[in-house]
Every structure is written in C-alpha cells, then in structure tokens.
Amino acid sequence: MALTVEKTSSGREYKVKDMSLADFGRLELELAEVEMPGLMSCRTEFGPSQPFKGARITGSLHMTIQTAVLIETLTALGAEVRWCSCNIFSTQDHAAAAIARDSAAVFAWKGETLQEYWWCTERALDWGPGGGPDLIVDDGGDATLLIHEGVKAEEEFAKTGKLPDPSSTDNAEFQIVLSIIKEGLQSDPKKYHKMKDRLVGVSEETTTGVKRLYQMQANATDVMIAGKVAVVCGYGDVGKGCAAAMKQAGARVIVTEIDPICALQALMEGLQVLTLEDVLSEADIFVTTTGNKDIIMVDHMKKMKNNAIVCNIGHFDNEIDMLGLETYPGVKRITIKPQTDRWVFPDTKSGIIILAEGRLMNLGCATGHPSFVMSCSFTNQVIAQLELWKEKSSGKYKKEVYVLPKHLDEKVAALHLKKLGARLTKLSKDQADYISVPVDGPYKPAHYRY
Image (tube, rainbow, N blue to C red):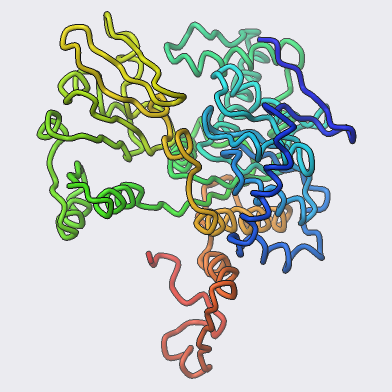
C-alpha cells in the first residue's frame, strides 16, 4: 500500500481526499458553530487561559463537520491535534479538508479500505521520536487498541524475539493491526512503549469503546496500559431512538430484546416485542442496535422478503454477518450506489439491501446526528480532556475506567443553557441543606441515573 503523508505550506501533515473542498467545509463549519453552544461556551470560558498549552491530543472519531468544531475547540484551548476517523465511511471530505488546511493534522477520507484506515490511525498516533500523544479522544477504542496491542507485542519481542504473526488470527482487520505492529517493531522496538509512557489518558465516545476498556480492566494481565483513563459515554439508548424515529415516520415497529426491563419499556410505548425468528418473513427494515455480535446471520437474511433493508447503528460491523453473506456460494452483489448494495441469493433469486456494508449507517449513508446533539456529546469530551490534563500529576485518577463525575455532567448541561434561553432557579442555603446538596451542585448523587 503506497500512501504518503502530504504537508501544508506551514508544514502541517495531512492526507485527505481533496483539499479544494476546504472552503466548502469552512462554510458548513461556521454554520455548525452556531448550533454547538456547548463547545463555543468552552472556548469563551477556557480559551483565554489556554489550559491545553503544550498538550498533544490524538483523536480517532468520525471526521465530520461537527467533529471539526470539536477539533477547533481543542486547538482554541491551546492543544496541538492529530486526527483520523474511526469508520471507513464516516468522513465528510469537506470537513477533513477544512481542518487539514486551517487547524490540525488530519488523515481521513470517505471510503477508506481497512488497510488505509489503520494507516490513518497510525499516522494520527505518530508524533515523531518524542513518543505519542498526551491525550486521546477515542470512539470505539481503535487508537487505544493499537497502542495496547503494540505494547504487548513489544514486550513479547523483548522476551523471546518473536514477532507478531498476522496469520494467527482469522479476523481480517486484526491481521492488519498485527502487520502494522510487526513492521513497526522492526524499525523501533520501543515505539508503543514510548507512546504508553507519555500518554496521560483517554476519553471514550461510545458504548462499544467503553466495553472494550472494561474488558481490559477486568483482565488483570490485560489492564489498559495507557496510564490514567477516563471514560465519557452517555450510554444513550440507541435502539429506543431508532424505534421512536421509525414509529414517528409511520412504521409499525417490532422490537427484539433480551432484557425484561427494556422489553417492558417497549411494550409501554406501544411496540411489539418478538424474536427475530418471529418476524424474518414479515419485516421490511431490520436495524441492529445491540453493540453485540452475530445478531443477523446469513441464514436469517435468506428468509427475509425480497428487498428487505438490513442495516446497523452500532459501532462495528459484526452485528450483521457480512462475512457469511460475502462468502455465501453464488451470492451476487449489486451496488446500487455507494454504501447501498443489493445481495441476491442464487437459490431464491430474491435479494436484500445492505446499507454501509453492515457498518454505522447513519454516518455511512448520511451525516450523523444534528449539531446540537453532538455539541452535548463533544462538550463532554472537552470537559473530560480538561479534567485529565489538569489532574495529570495529582494521582487523582488511577489505571481504571471512570465515568464523568456528576458535577462535570452538570457543567456540560450548563454550558448549553444560555443559548436555549434558560434561566435556572437558585437554591437558598436552607433549601440546599434540606435536600443535602451544595447550593451550586451537584444536585444528584453519583449513582443517580437521569
């Protein structure tokens, strides 16, 4: 794979699809800023003190217009930033071009191959001979994973001289990861250790990445190696949002569930709760939202009605059995348009329509969430990164997974209120004492779930 890093006239590195799109990206970015009051409030409140001065931040998160506002918030607070996307289809090329030209090093374009994707991830982590980033903004945990697996491989190489073996796994994507690490080991056997030693911590955007971190923490021999780790994730009920949107658009919605509480909530909303097998021949649209694996398998797809739509709103592509579909004998793939494919089975001559190759379809086939929604999420990231950087030498955070403290959650909400015209009531001291909270919050205990 022959990819080369390009440089702007000022020497900043980048690799994007088309730099001529930068002006268009800047216009959309300026529109999004108006709808992202949390991030703009962060710039107003924290910008003058430059709290990130001297900090290196690597981001692995969908390179969209909304993410561009996040990146420029981090740089406005003093950080130096390198960025890649966390999905091969989610980059908006005009957003990547605007940031590459004006603000930060970017390595992202829509429609990357998996090899290109991991090349971009490695470039975003590559800060030169002085180690890697100080902080990581991750989404799905791929940047964290690459460092983690790199350190494990370097430790094995130092003990035994053994290089990673890509053929040791059947997972095509992990084969690429091992190949990258193997190549790096032969040029610098301490590359990822240098990254580990410099890294202060990680803030994580999505539930899938949080699960990865908890798995690392649970395994005593596989604890997250990157020093202090903070986790930011709203644990948003993605399935509920999809069901509500479908229902609002006029669909009859059926929910599959394993959790009796979630099932009861769905029933109380007027939705049916059945198994996937109950509805295979009936449904027109199938949406996986579980964050688990092996949800819709190729045998399920064969039983669906002609031109049923199958798509995923989870982070990875393993909820839908794409490998089983791609290797099904005689199956025919017809690309209708980018990220929309009809797969026809030879025995039935009927087909299903797969969106975004089973990956995150709202960013693969559209532009993701509205700017205001992402302002709430990305303000979490900024606040978490500020907390990590401020406490980098205090010992406050151990090598563990943390949820954003309640007082910082409230700070994120407060940063959005002025834009929406809200005026908060103020507790008196007597009132605050009566309900056992500080006058200025937090107003709920840490265990309270909104």
